[in-house]
Image (tube, rainbow, N blue to C red):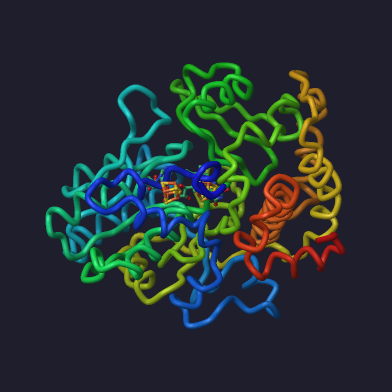
Length: 402
Ligand SMILES: Cc1cc2nc3c(=O)[nH]c(=O)nc-3n(C[C@H](O)[C@H](O)[C@H](O)COP(=O)(O)OP(=O)(O)OC[C@H]3O[C@@H](n4cnc5c(N)ncnc54)[C@H](O)[C@@H]3O)c2cc1C
Ligand code: SF4
Ligand code: SF4
């Protein structure tokens, strides 16, 4: 069995479908076909430009801006832009159903794949489920019910597999499929989630929201409304062990979901206390159509922040390389540095470090470097297949070895 089938799987859901031959499903796997490349050409008629530093990081876009819903949607991850677009697409009859996730009854952070086909069902899908999730499993139901227009909301591995599968086989060819992408990184397997949360939070049982924020801290929201803020630098050392993350997510090279019609995240938006500003990247005409459904509901702002973040990335890169190379390294349960010092460092970086699109630039480069060396040291035979062409160009910008 090829190594990709054995060791790399983000449980995207394609292989859980019974109605199509298993070998056809897996032939659309991104861990078999690689990230971007030909798929980007199929969608946009070209690959991202290697001469454009912004496009290399953020992918091909027709428009980018920051925004929040004027009336944020209670219970959504940020202001609820994704859920409102899904609701409006359904109300306008643009789609007959939405392939996405709802919360699992047994755990607030776990997911159940769903084909949402009523307004109530669509509203119920809001909010993050920060675990590997078989979103694509519901394609089966949409096909069996003869749907002709659907919306799929997913991470980059979902959208890659979906686009490939729709093009490669006849089953979904006649379906019009709209896609909304979430940026996605550091996702985890269900079996590891509680273990990780227990090491981050003082009260894992009451946690209801978790996000890696632009102020260099993890924010964990609790059922009583309080928010715990833990500096990245003060996490227990064992959380830096690459082995706690799935090999798939450590080999992921499309953080910003560049094949989605529209990507909706937060990482390139300015973090303003009390606001829920999000970052929107419109990529295709279908994405523009989805955005136009909620234009009147958006409070929009242009992007902010300085692009340059090179010295911060370089500062981090030596540690990343060492961490990826030392495969048998032992990780202690102790914190890297005390919380008070971590808070001080986070405050200094918030003042002097990258912000807005500079923070997005920093975060994309940080993860791209980490993942390049992860694959290089742990799956060298997959480097050529998995790594898209812009990655070595960015490494060479920093003078990092291939
Ligand atoms: C594991 C993970 C990591 C993320 N990392 C980043 C990041 O680093 N930077 C960034 O800008 N944004 C990231 N996001 C996206 C961000 O947290 C928000 O989901 C996004 O900004 C949309 O907010 P919203 O209020 O519009 O979403 P909502 O209206 O609440 O809708 C969220 C939608 O995402 C779907 N969804 C939730 N969990 C998953 C999942 N595991 N897989 C697929 N679909 C899912 C939901 O079913 C729902 O349809 C991440 C999301 C996840 C799940
Ligand atoms: S990632 Fe998806 S397509 Fe690839 S092996 Fe896993 S379930 Fe199948
Ligand atoms: S990090 Fe990448 S591979 Fe993992 S779930 Fe997110 S998009 Fe998929």
